[in-house]
Image 1 (cartoon, rainbow, N blue to C red):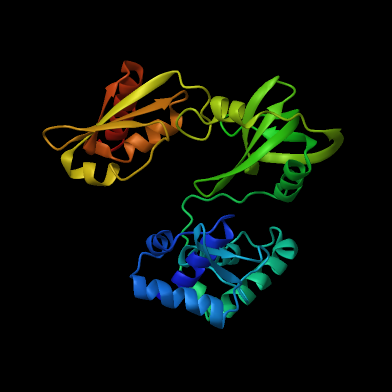
Image 2: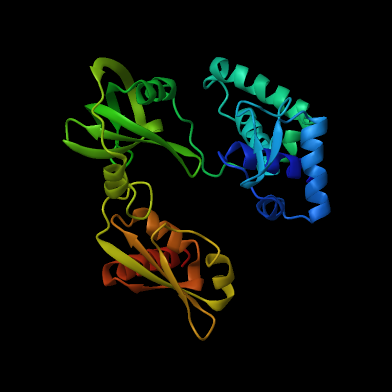
Length: 317
């Protein structure tokens, strides 16, 4: 596998350069000795028939045919791992959901894995555990098609908290797979604003004969991905959480939010700052750590967590 990695990396390096690559640059890219670098160059040229030319001015190596590709399927170790993971994800995908559409992709992945002497059946050794996953619902395919074809949708949406159903016309923007569940970011023409919808709460979905209104990705991120959680919105507060030294080793390796800030304290505890707007999901994640975390700020969040903990204790009296 290591020799394969060397050949692959050399091929990618030469493919990506318009001008000759110096020998020292090749050796650095392959992370191997001068003698090994020469052997890899010779193997790629003499065994695999790569159109490698060495030039004197400027000194280096380049492909004389930019269209050259390695024979068969060649992947890096990282790409092979991704293929195995993708194959396992497809195998555990919700039964009946896009089965016909995904079958050719599954077959193609099997062929690619076999070409690399990897048995598709062994992909089962990669476990993808789905925690608290909800069925995506029977309208997932319709919604996904509207997202990709850039068409508007008319949906009947059930609010999970109240059970009320409302009809809306929306311009779908993007689908998000978050914590084993699917969500749809869309421009809601009824509310005249960006909203995030849980796909499993869509009770009816109809593609309309009208183009979806496109929202710039930067605006989507600013309004829908700026705060903690899936139903985030623009941040309006920052949660400051202090974790005990015992729990800090785990929490310090986690990413709660791309814009989080953290600091290690002299006693070994760990302080984490996370921007948020709505606190429901954040509170649930804080409660997971029980006595190993304290909310330092803001006061309303600290009060809300304290109340939930008190209510939990009362259940056991």
